[in-house]
Length: 407
Image (cartoon, rainbow, N blue to C red; front, side):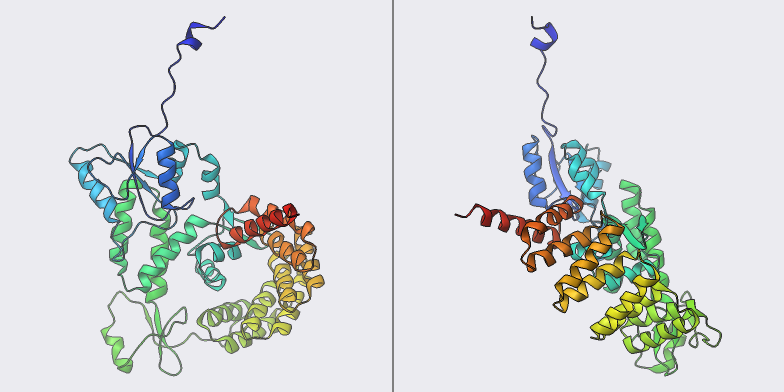
């Protein structure tokens, strides 16, 4: 017998029934077109622009919705004006919206953690830049596994956006004003405000090197057509050092940091010498060996780099990134068996290391062992479903599926 409640239960309305939804900023989980399709599937109406009929504005979480002048996005400003007039328009974060439409798996994707190499592919940021931002504490690893840092993609994307604005010449004050507006509407903007302060310090502390050239402490050379006369024209708020740091009493750590700075500047030969000076004081330093290897590779010395990566791994057998780089270099040199061995060591150390799964799959595929590669492509996609590497892995699996289905 059917109960009265069951017989007369009212069907549940779609999650976004009656909602007119617009998006601003870059979404971390999908494209705007895909999000608009999801709105329609959930009973709502998606629009490219905001209007007085808009009921919900979704703020993307890959970077911050700031205009080229540093101000908050035009859509946000317009919606806030209408809200002040009494219109009921909700401003929600992307993660919250994903919960509304039942995409909890996508929400987990947004909150996943990524290695520097994965972020480089996803966001188009060189790994050297990611390392530099970590050194400056512009970005902070959420966790580390055997020296390998894992980052929140939203924090790194936010740092990229702020850096782009600063490098484009937008003033720190203008960017801060835009972030303050976002803080008012969304909350939780303390971290980008702290990042902005770090960028400001990095941009503003200046000194003249031994040749009289004006530089930031990060090593960036500034245009200085008038010579030292520019010093008097600098704003009073800009810290200024009249000479390079005194290196006479530097220890291993000081030379290591100098090597990193020089490598970031692109002064690679000088960086190598700084790393060697660091190792003279502390030879058993795997991280210094690793960075020396990175710099030697950039100097087009792959064999020298390979030797230093091996030393780093010998000093710390669990050094995941060292093993990965050993594998990548062997693969680049056509030594596929050695490459596979290195990636397997990395996976022995940490079975859930996404980069090693992807690289091992490619090496197996190139070695004619595609059937063995399939499990590693699939494993990589468990950790990352977006970006060029994920697309490449899916493409390989599609290709394998098509070939296995062929007569």
